[in-house]
Image 1: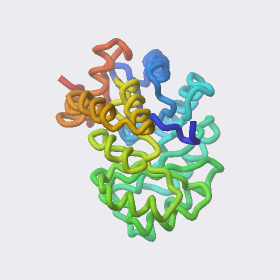
Image 2: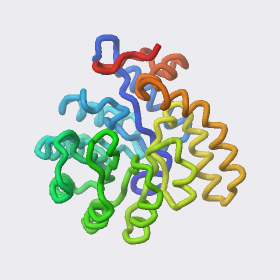
Image 3: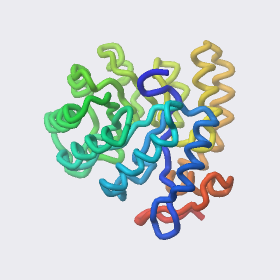
Image 4: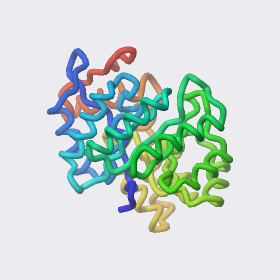
Length: 276
C-alpha cells in the first residue's frame, strides 16, 4: 500500500432524515468499502457533502472512520474550503483526529490568482506533518491548478499527490514527467486512460458501490492485461452513467447504497435533494 492507497473511494457521508450524521450508516459503509477492496477512504470530500459539514462534524467524521478502519485502509480527510484560515484549522483537527493524509481542494468561489493558490496550499501543508493530496476540480471551484503551479507545489515536502478531476491527460503527463507527484484519477469515466498513462490509483465515486471492480481494473492495468482492463471498464459504464451522468452523483450514490441496504437512508442535506 502506498501512503495514500491505490483504490480510494470518495465516500458519501451517511445521514439520517433531517440531516444528522448516521453512525450506524457510517459503520456499515466503512465495513462494506473495506470488504470490497478499498485501501483508501476519502472522508469529507465533495461526494461527502463537505460544504455542508461544520468543522466539528468534519473532525468527528474523521475520528469515527479512523476508529472503524484501523490499519486496514488509509484515511484521507477533506480539509479544503474557500478560506485559508478555516482550511488550516480543519487540517489540524483532522491530524488530531487520526487522519493519515489530507485532501486539499483549490479554494473555490473567490477565484484567487495562481500565486494565491500556491500560498493557500503551502499554508495548509505547513499546518501539519501529514502528506497532502491536491484536488484539482475547476468545474466546481472556478479555478484550475495550472501546470506551473503543480510543479511549484511539488517542491513542498508534504505535497505528494494530485486528485485530477480536470481531465486533461496531456497536462497530467507533462506534470508527471516533471515532478514526483502521484496522480489519482478523479473522473470515473476516465479511470482506464489515466491508469494506462501512469496514474498511481483512483479516487472513485463508483467505488462506493463497486470497489471490487475498480480494484480489478487497477490490477489488470498493472498486470499489463489491457484486454481485461477494457472489459472491466466497459462493464462499469452503465453504473458510471447512472451515478454520474444524471442528477447529482452524491444523491444517486446514496440511493443505490440505501437500495442495497448498505446505509439505512438516502438522505442528503440541502441544497441537494434525494434522488428519485
